[in-house]
Structure formats: structure tokens, C-alpha cells
Length: 377
Image 1: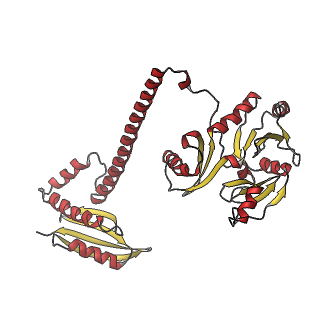
Image 2 (image 1 turned 30 degrees about the horizontal axis):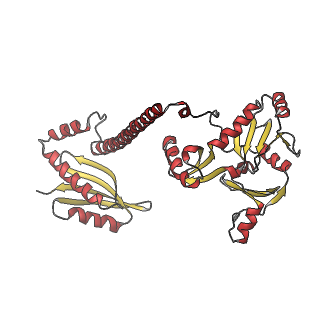
Image 3 (image 1 turned 30 degrees about the vertical axis):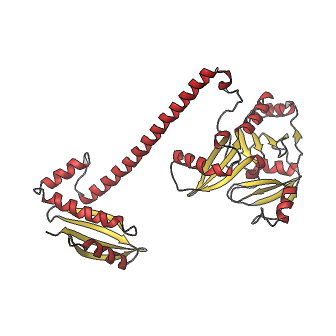
């Protein structure tokens, strides 16, 4: 994607700029922004890219299971807390899924983000993209390490990286702390070469997720009694939010259990095409057999799940109840034939169940076996 203008906030806090297409040209200080605005007006169709200094942005690759975006954002907030120098509530935190089990997270202090964007807004400059300098050093999957001026820029393969001043790098190396271990030997470049990289590399994650603007806290205008009232409302709102989150969590857990119950019911009674009320349909099925089937099913399944609870290595794959012979047919899988045999002996222990082995087979790296469970009189 073509970029019109690049603005870069250097690690020392200076705002520099240059047209993206002017390869090899040294950037200039923004000053009053007049020249930059003129360049933006000439290429209105091209986006303006703001690049933040890596020493002000925390970038981490987080490992987490694949889940919904809502759950992922909550997990990122929790996992990033120990990596931040300021409270999570005072940071602008964005993240993006890279691949299964990995997520890129970027965090920058609200006060810094607002100050930078407000300063540009006063000059009538509004960036379309906000990126981090270390992410623009190389395309995704490549590693690079370079020095420009008094700073070393390091970009890792998965998108995170860091910026250190050369004095700190020297101190770390003297103390045996290899911050750049696994990275290439830094190549030397100037600011023009650094801007060339900023211009030709696509950003991985845009930090500009919405408008920002500095504003004074409303609490400053409240009288003491009003402050107490607002605090009480906030506490009450948090309490209601907590109740809603707790109810939502229980609802999700109940939905999962309902889904599992439907899967087991369909497996036990494959001729049922529609499930409306599992409890009522289950009683109806057993009433056809004068109630004896209900006792057999409940006793056999209770014993089965009781033993399964103490055998995490055993997996229940299928379950079907034979209403004509009052036998519970199950397919179980384990890591070995010995594991299945031991589980069979555990089911038979106590004499309440008669377990008939109906064959076992190798299924990939696991062993599957079919059993018929019958309640003994």
C-alpha cells in the first residue's frame, strides 16, 4: 500500500516527517507543520502514517488458546498487566491474532498517545495509521537489527521488538545480558534509511482504533457531595456489571452443558430427530418399557460416569441405550489396550454392572473399544 506522508516520533520525543516516496531523503523536523500539511494536501488520497518510538510502546507475543475476540481481549488485559510500567487502565491496549495459540499485543500510555495526537491535531494533521517503529523494520517473519544514530532497533520474527539507546546496549553487553541474542549483527543506517523502511513495510497492527482527545476530568467540576454521589453510582454500576458478568458466565456454562447433554442424548437415541425437552423425552422413552429401562439406564450411566471421573485418560466417544434389552452400549478410547482393560475391571468392580467386551481396535495413536453395560439384578 502506498503511503503519502510519514511522521516519526523519535525515541527522544522529536516529531520528524518526510514524504514516503522520497527514498533516501533525510527527514525534517515538523516545526509548525505547515510544510507537512502542504504535502498532505497534494496527495489527499494517500494515507498519513504516524510511527511511534519503540521505547514508549510495550510489544509482546502472548500464548493463549484459540477463543472468541471478547474472551481474547479480556485475557490480553490480564496477561499484559505485569509487563506494563503504568496501570492497565491508563494504557491504550490493542491486540491481533497471529496464528493459533499466539497473539500480538501493543500497549502505550494514554497520556503519551493523547499528547502526540493532540499536538498533531493543533497543526491540523490527522494520521490515518499509527504503528510502532520496530514493526516496520522488516516484513512479517523476518528478523532485523540495526543502529540509527544513538539507538539500536531490533525486530523479532513474530512482530514484537524493542528500541534501546546504545549506552544501555553497551552496559547490558558488559554485564553479560544479551538483549539481541538470536538477532543479526546490527547494520548501520541513517534516518533516511530508517524512513525508507517505514515507507515500504505494511503495518501489522494499527494502534489507531478510534479518536483520541485530551479532556479534563469531570470530577474536577463537582462539589464534594456530587463527588460522593458519582462515586456511589460508579460502585453501583460496577456491582451491576459484576452481577451481569457472573450471570453471563453461568449462562455460557449452562449452554455448554446443554449442548453436551444433547450430543449424549442423540448418541443414545439416534432415532430421535428433534430435541425439545431432554428430561421429558427421556422419561417418555423409558415409559414405553414399563419403567424398567429408566432404572437400567440411570444405574448404568451413573456407574459409568462415576468411574470416568476418576479416569481422565479414558474418553467417552459414543453412547447408546438399547431399550429392548436395557443395555447401555458405549465406545471408549484410551492410550493403550491395557488402559481399556483396567477401566473395564473398574466398571465391573462391586458387581453392580455386567460389562461385555465387544471388541477393541487401534484408532490412530489411541485404542478404541466397544462395551455393553448391563445392570445385574
